[in-house]
Length: 430
Image 1 (spheres, rainbow, N blue to C red):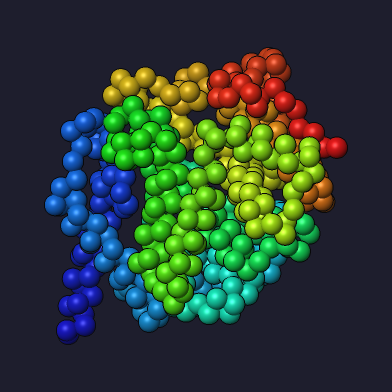
Image 2: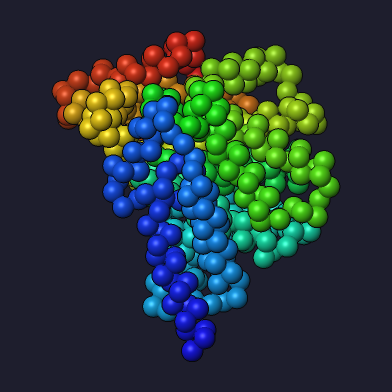
């Protein structure tokens, strides 16, 4: 009777907690519009005692879930139980985790929404990181559970499935000959953690939205790499809470946190010109030396940038799904901006934008230049496969565009405004 009462109270608490917004962005998820009310409070935003209490309860929620997982206990009437057939199929997929056509959507279904935990834990084991760094597997799984839980599942795009997809892509890049022959276990460890946490606690809106609504994160990070700084700091918080690396020296833990930050901050798309120019200059001079730790770290930054925006380089079936999801997220932000008369952000107006136009601009001005330079650095079968899919997908979206507008020349001009220095340059494969 005592155990039943405890579970009853626990379930009531979980139900109450999950009606609140996870993470530091906002609290209430009962109404999609209400997610952003706190953002719209302008300079009157305050962090109250009740807010701190909510964070404590959210931490307890993570502990409760992970504790049940470790002890093999399931909540009564839980839908999180998978039969052996699904588990078997998921394991079969993990045997081919290094294939570029890995279907993360299918894997997420087979793992009942636990793709990030399952895939990242498998990669830690596959790369020998658990043994090399003497990691406690219970702490590792708890850390990954916390990471997955702190992604916002209601985001159409920036959610745990995207994080799992980026982590799988990062694994593919780590296997490339130039990297696999040079990277240390430390490099691989940083890369996988950064990939898994690179969008942690993403609110589903972009930096300009946070800035123009005077969100406290924009103030905290002085309107610079606001989201990326938050993702990094959130990751550091979970690393410390999990105690995964508590057995390491303080110096090594601080170095790890700093270098993970360097990797995550490199995904800020507004810094694309800086990183691409440095990458291009290194390749022109031919002076990249992967025996140099700083050069390896820079290449890992470029690899994570590639992994983050590699959707157009996947097969059409996968790429199209990602295109639809990211556009849905853009349009949802635009709907909120219209409702509150904030001025609709570029790419976010569902009345004037189309998926095809957005994707063609994205591919032309951001993806092609980056992956063209990556192919110069690592001219392998994978690089050529990615460029091949990119060309086919762009042609497919142009076909859709022609059907919609009767013209193949309409490219969304918004991307041209992002950074004129990088946009006119075509990818060079020589």
